[in-house]
Image 1 (cartoon, rainbow, N blue to C red):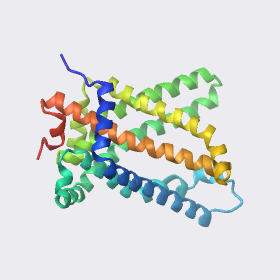
Image 2 (cartoon, rainbow, N blue to C red; image 1 turned 90 degrees about the horizontal axis):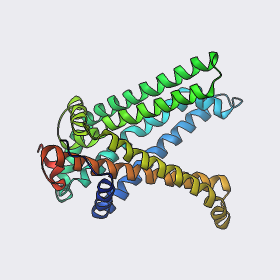
Image 3 (spheres, rainbow, N blue to C red; image 1 turned 180 degrees about the vertical axis):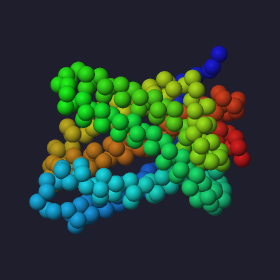
Length: 277
């Protein structure tokens, strides 16, 4: 009988990891944010310089290649490197060998990049199929129930595939394999655990939604007190909530990975990142 990861234990382990490495994790989370901000700046710059000023901004954002691809292209490498660093510092004991650890991280960048690209390609294919299907059906069917049902089915599929790929990043960073080996390792580790991983993802997304709602309520009066406009304060608040989401996601991925390795390979969580050294 397959032993299962405990959702509560994953969240508790994530908190332990944060307390153990909080300085490194905060710094790398800031680096993630910097990568995203660089991408956003370049996207807005290209939109402002290469598109007619008479076009509505929402229309430009939807159709212009700079708007569609500027963010991931500009921010992807820096964001991924920061995410790899977060996995590395949460692997027990590695911060005592800083130079060799970060050198190893640089050597692992291309295999990890390929693994992540394959994972996002799978998720992107699902999203593209959903958008295409919805556009086609909306021309012939006015039933909102049908469209809502298809959207919910797509959401379930996205969460399921995300659960399948959940352990890919730590496996690619720590276990020294190629991109396909990392994905296969994720499939192996998550076997029998995927509904629990889906619950972990859903709880985190629910927390993000609640945080957004709270931020939208408290941000305007707080901004008025600080002399900021309502829109600026809300934008900052939402960005902070999203930043916290990224940090929590990184912690939960590593905590779940350590638990799954312990169950699969019979080792302690402290040694989970050293299995293949």
